[in-house]
Image 1 (tube, rainbow, N blue to C red):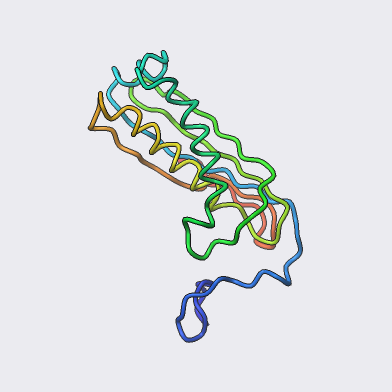
Image 2 (tube, rainbow, N blue to C red):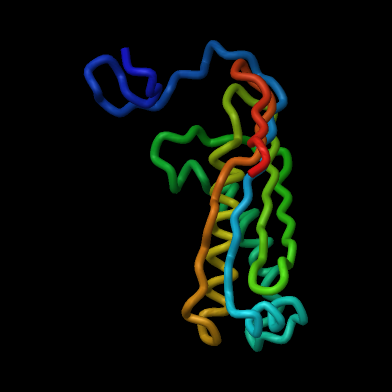
Length: 159
């Protein structure tokens, strides 16, 4: 049998049956980086873009995206999220680091919700700034940490 749990013995895609698993408290933390021109970063940091407060709009977009993960990723289970938090760190001279933490009391983890939250938040930063900086990049989308469940605690080692 394949170690990839989203495929059955014949190789067909499937939603993993988590019905026999215990419900536990689970959290996941993910991050992404939006790299931009220093002048664009100054506009974001100082809330001077004509579209409004970029980071607050991105925060709402990330929260909304986490709640819609099962609608976006075909084999994800819909989860009753108990918390989704996003934070933004201005990294001079040219980047915003996005971090999301998602939590749930369920039979499966929330890694995809945290990853979806940071991705959509980063894309929202891009969307709101693209009129002044088309050269932005969204980079390093990754799981930083997860807790709960049978596979235990994972923390990404320092770079």
